[in-house]
Image 1 (spheres, rainbow, N blue to C red):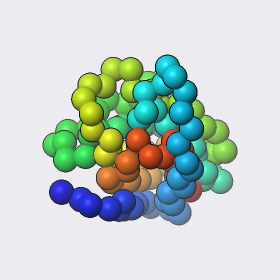
Image 2 (image 1 turned 90 degrees about the vertical axis):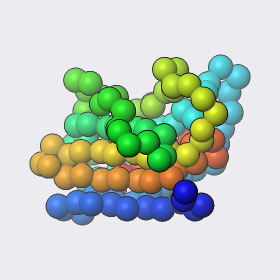
Image 3 (image 1 turned 120 degrees about the vertical axis):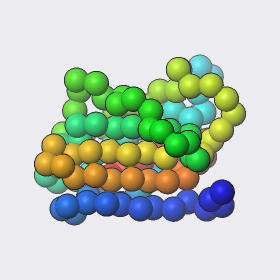
Image 4 (image 1 turned 135 degrees about the vertical axis):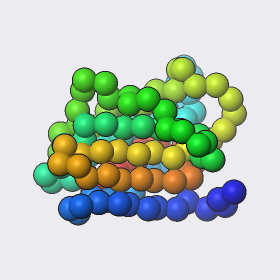
Length: 116
């Protein structure tokens, strides 16, 4: 089991960095909710998958028909997730085939994840 935040970015271009900001709490929000930011200057994120760390399968694409253009951000809400796990893995795909992964993100502590 991973004991610290690990960043692994696989990319064909310059896709990568994790930016974390402190957790802001609200009464109705799940503590694992986060904002995903596309910090890349030229990659459009077309697919995002999130799964509990240690899971053998990725969750479904949470963007659906939406995309995140460079500089855009969007919420990832955990209304359909169950359980007390805070450690999650995040996978993104760019429109040119770029792929990025973040492993072991403690979403109970951080509320912003940025791919650059």
